[in-house]
Length: 248
Image 1 (cartoon, helix red, strand yellow):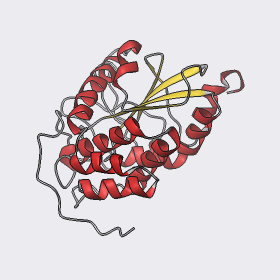
Image 2 (cartoon, one colour; image 1 turned 30 degrees about the vertical axis):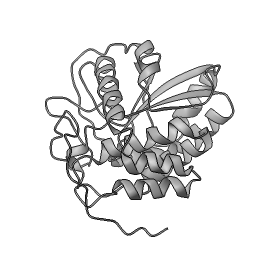
Image 3 (spheres, helix red, strand yellow; image 1 turned 120 degrees about the vertical axis):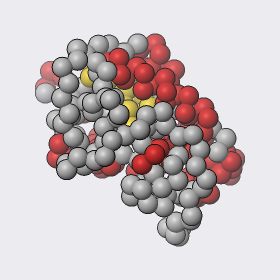
């Protein structure tokens, strides 16, 4: 399909938090908060240390606030992924670890709950791209199978708009869904923005739990297992360590 970008849609209320300016190693921090320490500096993450004690997120809440879930509930390991479709470091993580995550979910080794945050709304050209992309993902999650869900998730990161540039309107997001085989009903859901408000609510709840787990820090990408932080490396080794811990 054509990759021609349309003019931004009108701004909505967007995310709750205002990110600060980028650092020289490129990614984002929330106003008054620090970004989670990742081992993945080489994939675009920033190191922003905090002395705050880390806690444990409520896994019962996390089970209800994901935009979509990949893998089986009977998998021996469940993780919670926190991403923002406007986040370059999240795109890099998808590029380096997405295939390993998909394989682990498809093979029954891992259940992945994807929480799509929206604090980078104000970094987008339209002012609400993170929310609208998360809403589009929720449309796909509601009506399509796991193969299409994972394909759409990956495609949205592949087609990630540049920060502050013209981004994809709802019609373009719907066209991406068509590209991965989503139904006309799903495409219409995306074009109408039918799930944006619901996605914003899930983002707020998910962000609160992430803040608890990281001792007041919030950043993407972040990964939790049993409500506690998992350190993410620059390659898929961290996925292998999750599904075969005795061999890590």
